[in-house]
Image 1 (cartoon, rainbow, N blue to C red):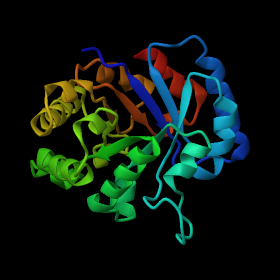
Image 2 (tube, helix red, strand yellow):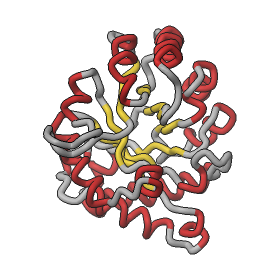
Image 3 (cartoon, rainbow, N blue to C red):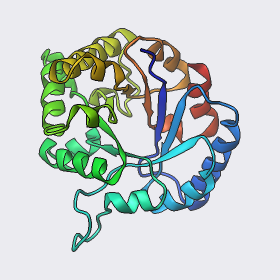
Image 4 (cartoon, one colour):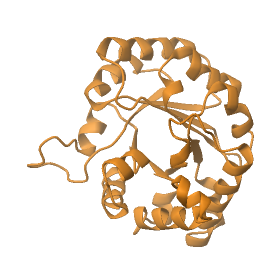
Length: 251
């Protein structure tokens, strides 16, 4: 089965309204006519509506970087999944390492968010990945299995087919260090085997697994050429049209 590449830009806590909409405009123009890869951008929540408005009718989808699992209520500062859907989101990133390790989100909390996203009709981009100490201790697969199982508890086979997995080794995020194409492929293959073990081969062949961690145009081609790497979740390189398009065009 051929899985369509999916490249998403995670803008994190960067840009302002003017630069966010300008970036969206630039990407919209640069992406005209490109149909063989799925592309999404994930701006800060306060710019979602403005960016989605710019990208309406284009071949670039919009995603959020996080959301809460409750539908509505007295949850000051939080954003609900249906709110994201309402302003034009298709995707939502859940379980990013910065949420897990800086903001101390547990897999149990992320699991509630996964179910809420699916119920709202959003596609979760679920992140898993190990710390440097965990890789050096040889526990990468164990850590990823624990995060996978905890974050996806109760998810059916049909629901799993809708989910995107992003492998993000924590030691490679924003550090300039990148997993070698061989390291990425090894972990992606292990994750696909885990999906097959939990569900079946059909589900495993359907699910797209992105790589994230200091991806840029200079290293993306080799990483994306691996059979089990189905795209990239891009951080800093997604903040400029040229660098992000370099990844998209260089695959």
